[in-house]
Image 1 (cartoon, helix red, strand yellow):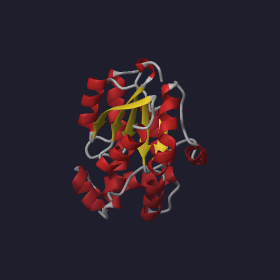
Image 2: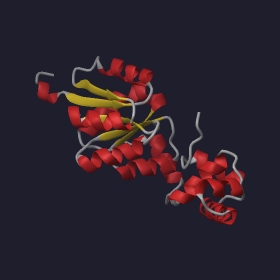
Image 3: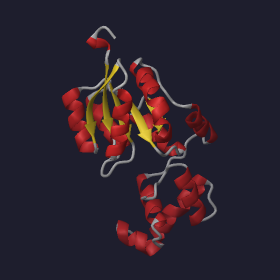
Length: 212
């Protein structure tokens, strides 16, 4: 490129240094793209964004503390024109809806990042939305999206850890019967027959995630 002003300035946010290193290696060979900052968590991402003002941000959705979706919301609240691409190993439909609702302009699966990241950066920088076909298909399978309350998701997450209704109630400062009621609501919304079925659906659709 003949003009420095045409170079797309990119911020990479991921809690795994090897992922950031891999993306840096890809981008260093692109004459029209420059990696201007890196961050490993939400706090660093917000600080880095304010310092470097990137044209495009690659945002890992799963980080310790505030996740990439919440971080995206915070950045866009302060910078409405921010162009953010979600970077994730997960692609449950509920997570996709949340990310798009938060304001991401693109979505890349980490297993395709080496072949897709350059095209994604250029596409989003050009003002276009980038949602790969496999993700669009996943959305079409589950439309309209299921909407669980924050408390229902908390109950599901605790149930996924093997806690019973009494233990869930203790954790959330409520009664076992209240925890059971929330689970019954979840079963109804997900079309699940029991707890195991609800957890399987929730994990597959990206409503909850099991810690690695």
